[in-house]
Image (cartoon, rainbow, N blue to C red; front, top):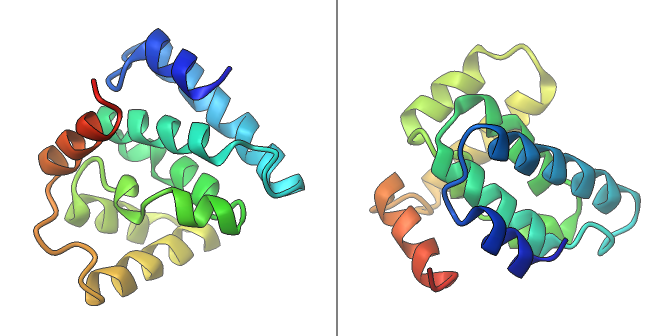
Length: 137
């Protein structure tokens, strides 16, 4: 599946079982990207992350983080803000409650990016609208 097919099939706001399919696709692509940079198709991975961001489920934060941290290309392609579909404060609170090293790494990256100004004027609605324009839907 490529970006166009994924966008056509689910749009930017998949729901229900379609979200499970997006999660499965992202997990599979993340594994490929970890094995060899470029094999995961980071643009497709980014679209999956946008779809999960729009769903706003905190349970997806670590899946998005795993995708972002799969390699250098993925890190550059997947915006840090995509972890925050439930908002920055809720995401930081969620990550701080997790007892996993990857959650701590994600939290520290969010804190660092926030301090650098990457979340100035951030809103879930604004970011979602920006991606709707980016994907021209």
